[in-house]
Length: 227
Image (cartoon, rainbow, N blue to C red; front, side):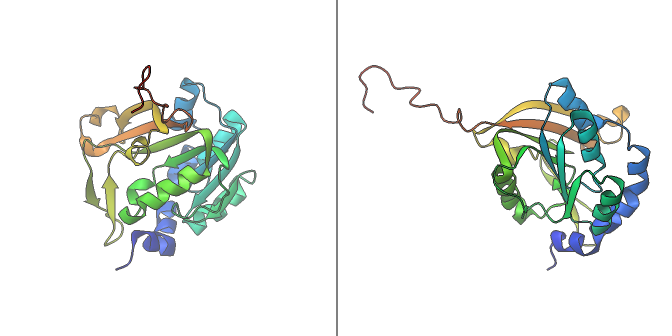
């Protein structure tokens, strides 16, 4: 059976970009909710990787707002080629989230901007491992994706055999005591009037990676105890 990753690398990632290109162009100069959230909590990244970056439009705004050094990876050849022309200061490559071609501890911020819901379920552990590997100590992880009350899947209407998997994706990392949620905002994918519809709910979750304080040393050891 063909995996969703194979389908997107073969054609659907390009088709997704073609369908959404006009919307990207219309919102190119908008800061967007991720950058606004970072401004609100006073975080300014120096070196950013966006996984599922499309043509790099959001990364270009990271560069303009924070003067960040920006890198992006996306399965769409058309999106990456377009981004290289539109945003030459951004480093963009074709690839997938489960095999990041970067060194360990390369970035102080990694962004998942609405891509995890389309990833193969069997790849989620690989994706989390790769992001953790590339994120530096005390780095920041940003996830924007669907945020329903429980995990489920919808049929993906554009391609047969593909599903949209909706869940709280911050749980891929928050189970680990090295990752702490420092910001969470829930809103509707279709505007405030549809906030009550679970299928439309979107979340931005920001997590801080801090391995030094993940496991306090002997917090319950007292006096002469040797246990």
